[in-house]
Image 1 (cartoon, rainbow, N blue to C red):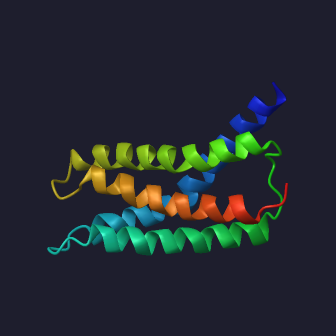
Image 2: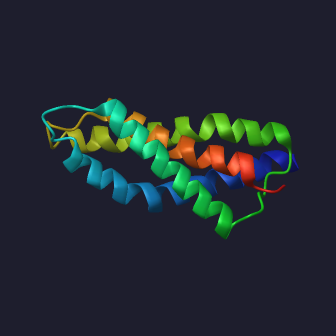
Image 3: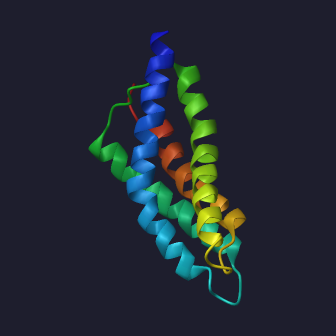
Length: 128
């Protein structure tokens, strides 16, 4: 039961961190999407590198993970990027009702790769 509570706390914490770090990036992405030549894969790669950098900063600031169970760490590694992507896609769908040039599917992948980069670094370098 304790592990599930820790997982819930970690999920809420990561969602809050995602909102405060990725939301400004998400606003920037709306202007970035106006490019006529769509380079989604390049953008995803650059955002993955940015996520790696954010993950590195988070390891410096918070060197210990609150998740001690290995299976919970793997679950976070697998689920966090998907949840971040779905949250971003939901926000993009809301914005796309007002603007025609917003592609929610792309925003899923943008946030997915930012979060994936950060989660990989935290998974690899955070002490339990």
